[in-house]
Amino acid sequence: MLKDFLFCWVICRLEKATGGIRNLGLLYNGHYAGGKGDWSKERIIPNNSYVNKSGEPVDWMFDGILYLGLNTPEGHGFNGSANMSDWIWYLNKTFAANGDMDQLNAATVEVGAKLNQSDHKTKVVLMIPDPGEYMSNFGDVDGDGVVEDFRDSIGTDKALQNRAKAIQWYVSIRRSKNGPKKIIQTLSLSACTG
Image 1 (tube, one colour):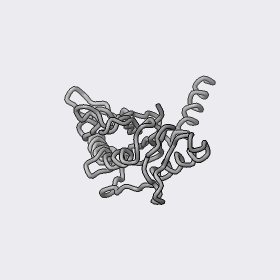
Image 2 (cartoon, rainbow, N blue to C red):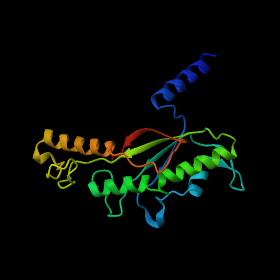
Image 3 (cartoon, helix red, strand yellow):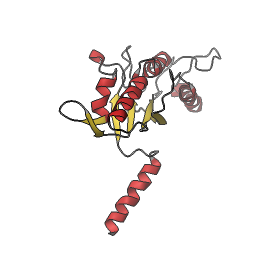
Image 4 (cartoon, helix red, strand yellow):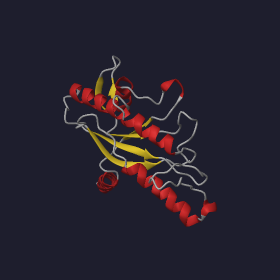
């Protein structure tokens, strides 16, 4: 009895700390060979729901999805070597019409309809790229004509301010939702670290 109570207490505490996510699925959505980082509705469904031998959903597998990009088309990593153009590429790819978020929306709608749960929402966690410590020419995020430099050689405090400025810029960018996405609930952002 006490064991069951403690288990329930821990689960409830974890749900509160995770925005209600109990089971988080990971979908890598960076640039990968063969388009493996591009997520279609058809690829998402068996990664977000249990499917039978016919490929039909029979239950939800995850109540949340973490989209995580590791690589860019330029060969940079989001763990410290990606620049402003790479970060913009990732946002555009993720939020484009028919992009990863649209496809997750379509998959959630389809699975929800098949499970008679049309009000189901998939919670989404999006990655924040790591600005790293070695980038000298990230890009000008605030339009002041000065390219952000993250190296400690410019002074530790200034480097940290520049990294924070880049992250604040990234988080503040709002992307068009391309129509209502009533079934996706964006909860948080997660740091991508090497």
